Length: 125
Image (cartoon, rainbow, N blue to C red; front, top):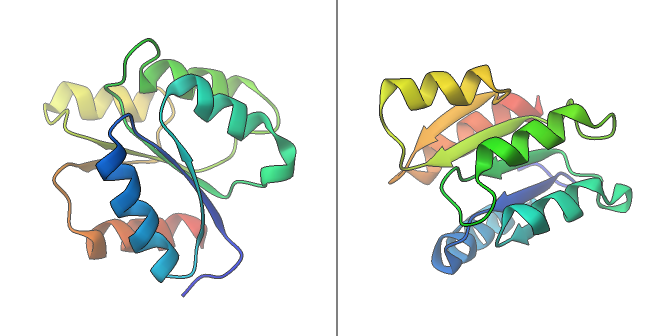
């Protein structure tokens, strides 16, 4: 159980956001939800949120996860936040691109929460 750690969940699908919020809160995390890349950046750039880790979908309308991570990695306040891509993009080239553009880890949907949580704990130390 990791208390006082805040995770930003970025996914355009409400059901996925809600499932993750429930599962993460049960583990003791604070959770902030974002339904788009634009909202994710607003939440991440708000220094009062003190985000410790981001779960980021790649395929979202208007601004995909690659653009979100590019902007996060350029900003001083957010450049070192661990980011785990949580996506259905399963081809090897997608995994490579996700890690090369600054992702710390890559988890495929559908996922097992226990496996995802182990990766979260790894990046939160």
